[in-house]
Image (cartoon, rainbow, N blue to C red; front, side, top):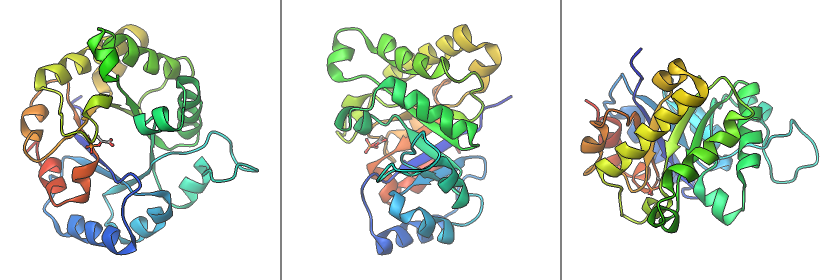
Length: 247
Ligand code: PEP
């Protein structure tokens, strides 16, 4: 089964009612590759606004979700609340949360399990720091982040893996096509070994880290790159070119 190309837009902590409505109306009016699955992740405060305005067929992700169903967890959002708001995806394990908010692999795995158990798809981010890459630990770091999830989750059909080298996020330093393909292939090998042929063949592995309208075409041609997670450029018209990079 061919893997459907997948492009996510991570708005991070950016935007306002006005600017998010503008991005959405731009996306609604653009001619988008009908074979690409498109998911945007605005800040939590704007999820409902996005759902109200974004046209059907384009999906919305939260940037995070908590692993407990409800209760005294100030500032958190539950899986049921996402479902109640017609939000079908969540990002989890973004490096900004792993690094700045100290989320560890076990916590990311617990949240991934909670989201999947509740029927929410997960864009599961993984990736190494520059120091880890320079000391030859890239594959070890990435697979150990994924292993924590595999210990809790056997069905990966609603997980999209986003490989995002930390040194490439928001820096303008994109991984070369060879560097990205090498890690994506290693992740697929790891999926094959740990979770079997079917999971390895069917799981989308997308690349994130300074993706732009200039570099997306070459990256999209790599056999193990099944789409992109886009930060900065998802706030700009260039996002449409990235969505259409596979055409
Ligand atoms: C991201 O935040 O997931 C990301 C890839 O950011 P950027 O595209 O800005 O590097």
